[in-house]
Image (tube, rainbow, N blue to C red; front, side):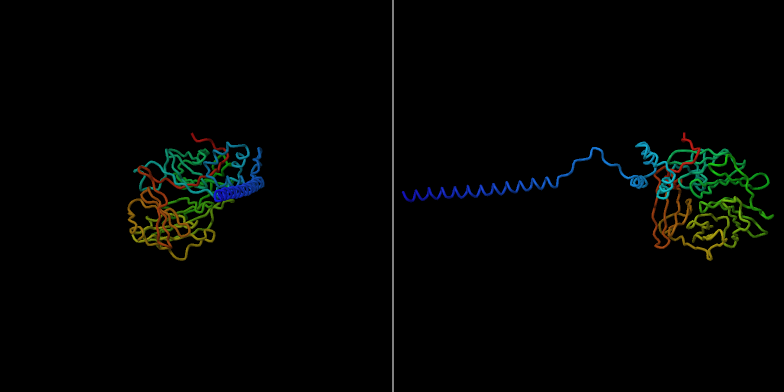
Length: 385
């Protein structure tokens, strides 16, 4: 009896103990949950404003300025403010300074290989600057300026009959001139046209050959804000290259010239013109090396003291056949850019000796040119058909 009673008492005590523990735990849990609820209320996310504040205009400009030109053309339709920003000349010039160069390709035309002509449709590209392409008809004197990104065209008045060369003279937005070179029955001549101001070409006085035989005349715009009138002349048995520079404001060529003698190169017929760190340079390709003379200061008529000799062993080491239409484009900083077989563009680092392929055309295509994708628009431009 006593043992049974003891067991009952023990069971009751155990039950009371469990009940106490459970009650205590329930109180603790309730306290904890209440604390969590209060914490949630303190850290709750505020309600979303049905009318959020607009981004500051300078932030919008900064964001838009980082986008590609083709995206910006679409974003003009978003709202009036964005359209106004994207069409603003200051924004266009700022965006221009950040715009990347894009490689354009065209269908492969074997007849054009081995030449330096860039022909699209019936127009030959004479030069590019700041996203604008200067083009001349292959059949007439018709000229135009085209922006491939915005697909807009500015039709130009026809230059003198016999015009075979037209170049940009681009100082800044709103300060752009064209200079053309023509040949008639007796001599060479030059004309100038100020974009957005002139409705016809104006004659320029060209430098005299001083009675010497003229073998070749050309216009070169390296750097882009300068136009050089170059003459290859023969004086007796000697051949010279004479360079006269056009003054942008006064529109007249310099009275003195920068002269490069025939002795500077082994074969004058193999000499080409390339840009070298923004300077005009004459380069000769031999089987062993690229020989370059750089006009370091066209204002002072100062050439580089020494000829730059770049061994071309890196071509053989990378299995690049020199006989397959090798075109040296320009040198920037320590890199020399060139196009091989119209299908690949390479950059050769002259310090490290490394070579990388920067562009490669797909099968059936060839490299046309590299041009910036910009929003630059000229007064009088029309949509491209």
